[in-house]
Image 1 (tube, rainbow, N blue to C red):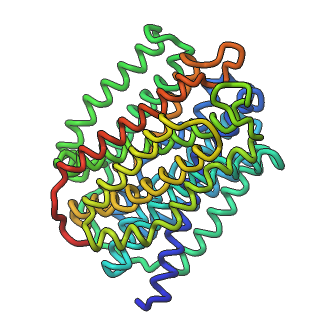
Image 2: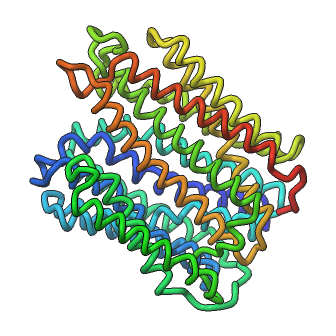
Image 3: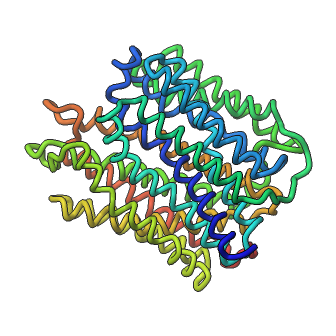
Length: 456
């Protein structure tokens, strides 16, 4: 494949990653207005965000039936779901259906990563994987301010329409520019395992989103907990016995994969939490101990340094991996994220401190997200690349829901008495301190990764 053709492949797949990553953050600023717009409770409205995590099945199908084909299926389903939600934006159940269809986009990044590994030569694959992984941070960084603009001018329908347009454009790019080349894995799709996994995820997300309304010892919470436990108890032996599991638990339990998946959760939790805490600090009234009092559209701009660092850092990350190895770059990224959040715990008064934090956090995040997928691919056979990357990506997505739940808990516990939608200084520092500790733990965990990996 010629270098211009390589570049077209890179841009096509990276564009799908950007559209996919926007699907979570575009909904976050709309959450406060959703209960009234959809005539539902606050906890029910939160499902508009979290339901996208219940459909993590295409990654395994991509290994079985073709990665380009499943990438197109994911993008088309995302686009159709966006149109359904845009047309019926006042109907809660149809918006939920549309968002569930958008959830197929959560598998776009792992499928794209394995496509790049199979299509491009090593040097350009490393750059491409770093670019694709960077889109997760870029989408989350630009998604919040973009959502503010879209909601201001067109409300929730315009937000969904933009997603649909992005899905159409990127689907055409993939169809025209990405060759269909992969090594098929043997076996068939495990429908029973997928159903049990979806049931377990649904129960867990129900607990996360509704426990505040139901109460921790209520009958619905206990039933959801029982369903979650039974699902886990069924899922593990099902996957161990299945000749073609949805998640290969033997592969997932390799020491390097356990560490990689833990890193995916901790660092993604830190990234999502940073966005929520940063926006909180930016929009809080200046009369509070922490607030800058910026309007919502302007407040989103404080995340621009983060997004710029993610865009600009893809190629340097690939160069560092070639020079020093994946493990070293991953450790460096976790350490830089630790420094960023620890800095903000100590220095958190004023716009300059906030911008410095977001910039340093962006540098660390691009190093982590650029190197982590390559690490995962280094320790799995190519025919299982999509499913292994899919589990890692799923944990990143779950971390977003966990970050939202943790933020809600902080607001409940450390909200300002007369302004309950805003954190006290103590609450904000507990938030940043916690994610600094998560990143420090991630830095330590990277020490136990194998020093050498097999080549792409």
